[in-house]
Image (cartoon, rainbow, N blue to C red; front, side):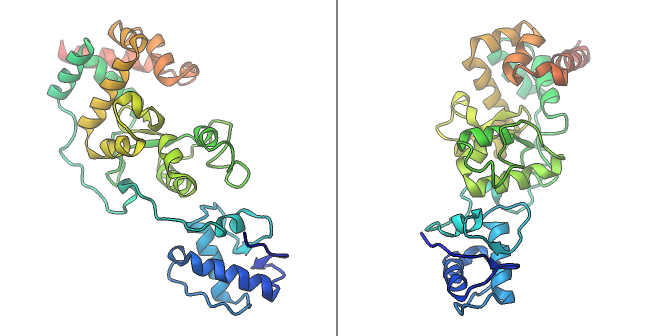
Length: 289
């Protein structure tokens, strides 16, 4: 465990011995430095400060990098890791995906309804109410909502102090839809498995930590399926509902308040989930009458 006596970088005391220690750690994690080549020279030169900022931004997932390594700060803690591997899940690949023409059709809803012992309008109502937008974002990735309180719980609060915007026992702080994937990516740099479990995915907004109830052996497999097609998102929803007799019964009976409480949690009324489900069902049911 490398220690330093004073700050290194912008605004730091920059004692030569401390600077050399930080420079050696930066060399260890060169992958995350955006091509910056750091020399071990004991000088907090612009290259070293730039590298510290790049490390904070990319590997340490800090919201506001300050290019300063403090003796007891998170940046030094993260620099001391033996290795920081790239994110493993293919959903973090930067390529844009064209999803045109790949959505759910009447036959998909009918198949799901038959498996659930319900009718297609019920399934359509859940899909519309859960996403409020679409199954995919503008880059063709699954629509997600990142839950910071779940990430905090799953990581045993270890990032609450250093990353309160993405690890916080208090629910909320979502920000706009456009912020969800950047927030997920930052959380994944801290703990990828916990991050994937802490987001709700796709048309039916199933939490990643429920991967087992959807029939998957790992959250990685669940997420890859959510990113593959709306049909696989639908299949996961069917499996998830079938796993809980109470949820299945509420859906079959169109007992919207009971279903919303089980599916969305005890605060479902705050977002009028039951009312939205009932209204969506009336719309889709009338269209098929």
